[in-house]
Length: 178
Image 1 (cartoon, rainbow, N blue to C red):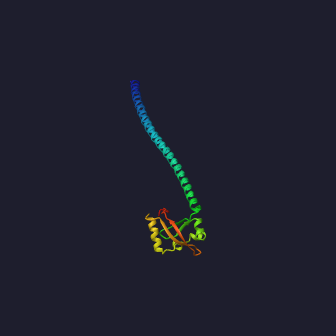
Image 2 (tube, helix red, strand yellow):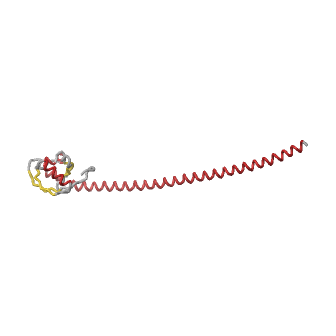
């Protein structure tokens, strides 16, 4: 009888073990499938992020190239303007309307006013225009507001000579100001 009970118990355990093993196998398979789905989802998400970053890098690279091209063109434009301003045979003065300072001038202006370019750049428009400073300011205001851009003045050179001059004035944006 003991052998029979042992055999029955053994059969019973092997059925339970088989069911437990089968259940564990299904649970593991389910976890494996869920894990794979999660891993695939994560990989797809990371892949999309990588693609988006590559696209962003390409856009940034393209923008950097455009920005470099614009900077190069701006530099070339400034060089052309500077050359046209500095090498022109006509007298050119760039005057700050708030202070009357001669901010820039060309060599033709230095020659006309009989001074060196560095000395001319230390001067104010009031030093060369024979009108009272109030009238010079009014004329600059008219030019700034596009009311008038053509004037006749008497200017004096560093040697004290007076010359009648015809002036064409154009407001220029400089450092964000006119």
